[in-house]
Length: 194
Image 1 (cartoon, rainbow, N blue to C red):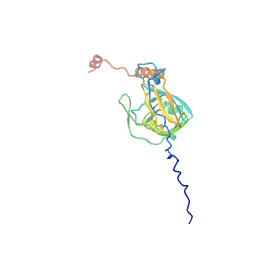
Image 2 (cartoon, rainbow, N blue to C red):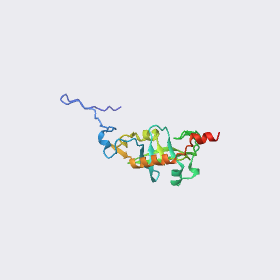
Image 3 (cartoon, rainbow, N blue to C red):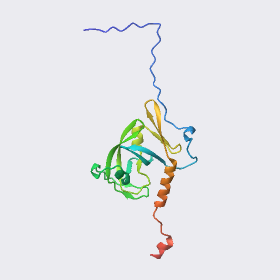
């Protein structure tokens, strides 16, 4: 049996200190609002690299528990119906209607140097957005988002990277949503038909 001999302690040496790695802090300051129009109430709309394509009009929604891809984007990415897996749980759309998904697909999203795989639920419904990114994507990226600052921040190595929103695109999406609203019949017209 062999025994390893430990070096004798030098009574004059200082104790070794634990090596501390400083991690950058994810947060927002007033400096992050520079370049944005304030005050505002815009949604957070970004451009993301989904698969091999730069996709515009992607809404980041912390309130969403799933990632949604609208059928126009699905077709635009040249994906086939055969690429979908089954997903049958109904969803509630922005206008309160029940939407039955077409299916589900897993795709990579590249953000800076990071790539995360995301399960998109594909729906055939109107939306001014091409996709909605929710908490699963934010958590996989270890990101935080701020509608006030119009940014998404996430750690990458020893630094913080940012995705900056397009306020003009967010406003275009809002206008498209308002213009798409079905016309509401007046109460008197409805009463005439009774």
